[in-house]
Image (cartoon, rainbow, N blue to C red; front, side, top):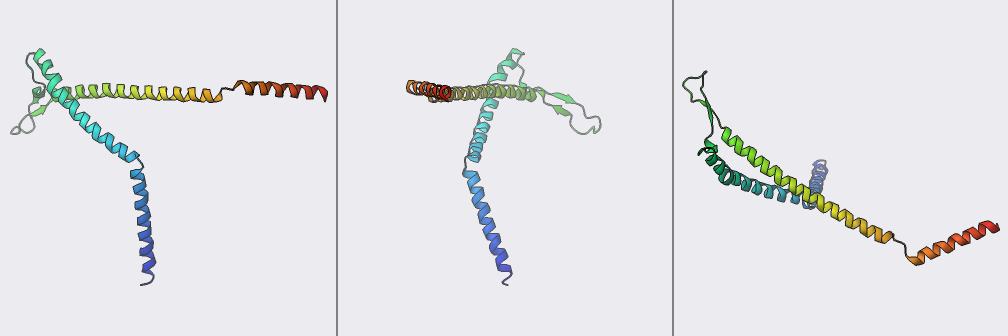
Length: 158
């Protein structure tokens, strides 16, 4: 009985340490940021799908003679099983999905371009701050000249 106790005790400590590390990882910020990004991405996807399905493709369908993109299909007769309904290829929904993809890619392009621009501005600002720190004052320049003159004098005397 005593031999089992240390094993279960060490298992409990291992589990506790594992849970602490998992908690640190989850609260660190990366997981929370990822979860927020997924939620916002899902909501944005629904908005884009509604935009494409309800606003963009109906006018295109009207221009094409009153065609409803959702109902654009190709029916292929089922030759193998005659009693089964025909196979339906819904290329209208595929066209709507392609339009959604293009809109998402367009938006993501501008988001990434904006993030890159912000990073460049931040880098320039940091570079300017570093250049200000590196800039030598007049007093330091005069002291450097005195040091150089003294070094030159001591090398000519020695």
